[in-house]
Image (tube, rainbow, N blue to C red; front, top):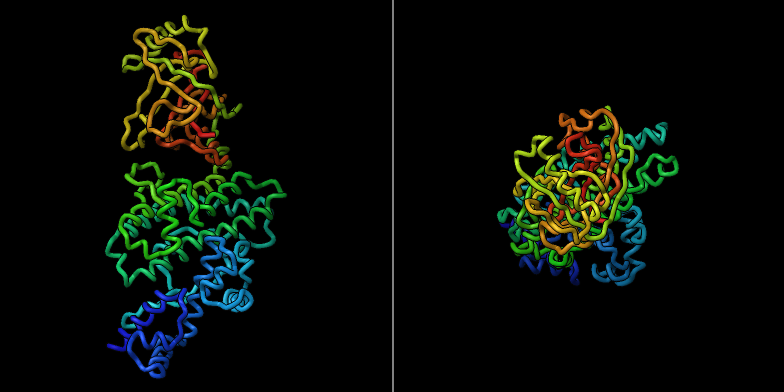
Length: 489
């Protein structure tokens, strides 16, 4: 069994020194073996020479680095021990089938050679898979028949998103659990885990995005593509390259991209993993991590693809007659709450007291049922509903009424003051259909308004500044026909 241990130690030595000057003699010396003898043993066991293994791994890692970080070709060449950019380019082209400069546009064509894992047999090389990688729903854009119309091709991509939305959120949660699991992150598993995470997941998503972008750009002239998908792909690619907006998160991600061994630090893994957020992504979590960011980016691409069609399907017995985004100055909601106001006559009578403050009225005008969760996730913060009206920021508060302030810019803290930025959808049609709950996440007006926003790639400030409201243009004793949904413009 000693020869198996020697090969395992040799592989570990090579993985640690991929960016250092290293010859096959150095490898055999590291395991205290005769160079000629160990060369033969390694080749007989793995099917490749030590030199081939080093070259394959360096070119594989170099491809990953060019794809994920956009580094300069000459810098990557020197890092992986090539004397000149020309010699690196020739070796890279033979290995990957594309030149280094083509990686960004043709990232999906990269060839990955995984580190060998020595047990009682040899695993790894180009054939290694992992349940987490295979559990994601990957797009097959571009694999359809040439005889399909542009609309049919686009529909095939949209159909994939249905499967992905039912599958990928839970796989991202499993990815989070895998990263949290200390037993998975010992020194012996680090090199393999790097390939699973950096190549099997991040690079594969980057390649999928490249295919999708190319495929959708070709369909764009036919007028079938929702343009919002391209900014969503841009944001996803930024995140996959390690560029995230949150300062603390960016620090941890940058550290891991520079040196994957940082994942042995539990504090770093915590920032990368984040927390499990459930199939809809709305469950609360102590830490918002890099995987949570990727999960949201993946969802945004899919929403942009399937939500416009979803919105059409959901309008059964009613239609959206107008939809607009509004960014208001500071304003104040003045209202009241209580179970007794489930009675339409009682609440209409209470609302009359606000007529005396008509001079403070502001858009959107009408009676309102405001709903929020105090800036918390829906699985934590209790739903709170208040009847009232939106007024100017300086409006006085009558006796027996409550107030909630709305401001143009966030203070970064959960809950009020909320943002005075929102989408406003006006509906027309059958009143029962507009308020139907069966087949909807909440009800018809809520779902359609939210889905239009998601399909257009506009941010919803959930949970910190999230609020919604039903608008009753004809009074709160009648049916609501308008819906307001918080956004961040």
